[in-house]
Image 1 (tube, chains in turn orange, brown):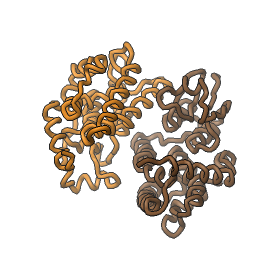
Image 2 (image 1 turned 60 degrees about the vertical axis):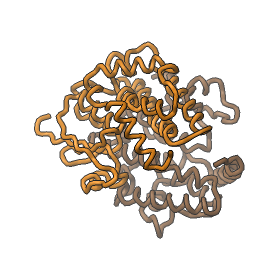
Image 3 (image 1 turned 135 degrees about the horizontal axis):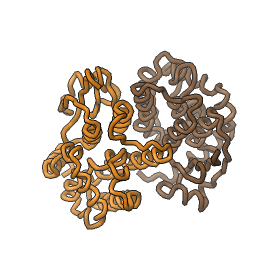
Image 4 (image 1 turned 135 degrees about the vertical axis):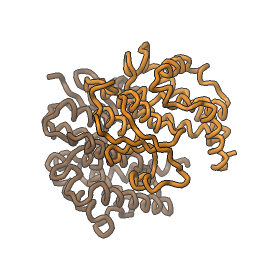
Amino acid sequence: MAGDQVTLLDLWASPFGMRVRIALAEKGVKYEYSEQDLRNKSALLLQMNPVHKKIPVLVHNGKPVCESLIIVQYIDEVWKDKAPLLPSDPYQRAQSRFWADFVDKKIYDIGRKIWTTKGEDLEAAKKDFIDCLKLLEGELGDKPYFGGDTIGYVDVALVPFYCWFYAYETIGNFNIEAECPKLIAYCKRCLQKESVSKSLQDPQKVCDFIVMLRKNLGVD
Amino acid sequence: MAEVKLHGSWPSPFNHRVIWALKLKGVEYEYIEEDLSNKSELLLKYNPVFKKIPVLVHGGKPIAESLVILEYIEETWPENPLLPKDPYERAMARFWIQYGVTKGAPIGVFYRASGEELEKAAKELREMLKILEEQGLGDKKFFGGDSINLVDISYGALAYWFAAMEEASGVKVLEPSTLPRLYSWAKNFIEVPVVKENIPDYDKMLAYVSATRKKLAKNYRP
């Protein structure tokens, strides 16, 4: 849509921000990327997301949309003529929403326990994490993507966490690929898509970032 | 027209959300009460991931998670729309629904806690509801404007179930002096016929909430 002004307030390492980047890339939307400093929040961020003061925020023609999955749905609805992310059938849409919601409820929070806890709590978190990934593997089945032949809403919700796996493995001392080879194969397949590879970050950089976060939180 | 069934549990506000939406759309359905202490094979088959109610089954195909079910109902039966048509307004409606999910953790604490912990949860709830009232509801009668929509439905428990929680815990949160607009919203919401006719009696709810409070407090391990 000519004349659209689109800005993304984001943080380079955020898997939630990556979701939005992938969606915008899939739709071929030109936008301005604005890196935010979350330790020193900008007036713009506070104005655009006064309720949560978080990224990502999509600003479309001056109007802010917050919460990553809500932004992805908004992008899907506004730029609807290209690369649909949600299926057209209501039942399939409901299944997509269910699994994206599952990713939201589980992956980040359990992942966070992996890099912030120790001992028994850490072991429990690792087990929980693998159980969740196995459930996702089951749902994926033989499909190349959760969206079928092309990437869709659930893929966009999940695949950004792949670049955080190396950090979880390093800090938690376990091997995700050994437990969930199908899921890792799926993630690598997604990375072959430009929209994904350009949106995700280098796992080593992410790991260094999380190690720094751990220090700041006083976890070590 | 394929069969619609709802597996639910009478006290659950998540269940009531789905009932209100189905009734607002004029959808005929069969209701199946589930015993959550003895979950049916069917429920476990329909919701293997969370094993919870509500589950909507349409033409034999199950959908779980009340908010997912609400969006499904909205798309499948478009009469009497419960979400705005404009994508930006829809995103805002979804934002406020999500706000209740993200910021609702203190409700769980409020449900089972006592003493200082209860007071802390009450304070957090008041703060969270203040933002909802000022920035979400504003001067509107309902989140949906003149009539209720999915946002109102998602906050419905505040209007009836929450009062039972307040009485059972002995702490008031939703008061006209501190949350005047939400307080009015709650009074109006309860009067909407589809809601009024589809919530449990207050006494039954109070008895259920009091009993559950005791159980939750007893089983709680920090």
